[in-house]
Length: 300
Ligand code: 13P
Ligand code: SF4
Image 1 (cartoon, helix red, strand yellow):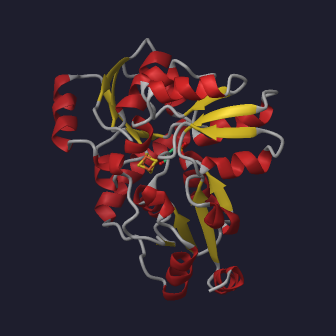
Image 2: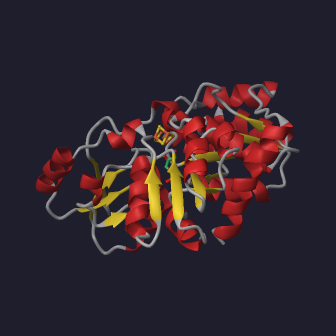
Image 3: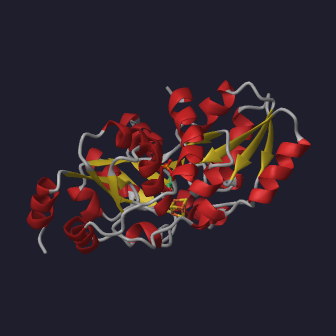
């Protein structure tokens, strides 16, 4: 299988390839659109093509299908999943709703459709602060990511943010000790970090933001070296946009294996056979669509 064969098949099938910044370099190279979770969900709604090949994890394909029920959404690897997307107990959401009269359940897009169906609004790391600020509710139950929730709470102190204990195993595992070591090794480098990391890391940061936030910050910065506190796939775009700048990872384990399980062979296979289509029960889709639509509205 060659890249030309994928591109030929893509044309024949009137398909488009979307990819998250965390997938491997070779997949990003053939994608039509690459972006963060917010960009990809917005983009999915604007596409004319009938078939979307979503190079990312399952919650991303699910969101694309929820927003575009008439399209075929194909996942190159059906097992590519985000561990954090499951880290909420639905009973807990119901309990919080009973306990607090004026509460908004704010759900990070890194969540299953079943969880989204219990939320008032979705957010991504690129728009979470803005959306929480815009809500009229005093109480916010932020699910599933406790790290992003705590960061949002700090940025919006006028709200009472109730935290959940979910986390991204990759971002959560990065330690302060490793960051301090990297800073010592690269004294001229700035530290840019994703808000899925723990507070001790965010406190050391020169910039905190989503993958696309990090990319635009680095592009504008006069600094020439950066220690990158997120999944290493983002280095592909960082290097492409900034050939004169240097990038360092904190350790060698900043790798989301689920994102990396997307390969060119699997993309070719799903395109050829139209397998691994995302299918969602219509009742569930309608329920999960509401918070996603509200996100797209409030993030404008
Ligand atoms: P963003 O795409 O919002 O930066 O989030 C990173 C992530 O972990 C996606 O799974
Ligand atoms: Fe989920 Fe973390 Fe992988 Fe993102 S990097 S998909 S949050 S496990």
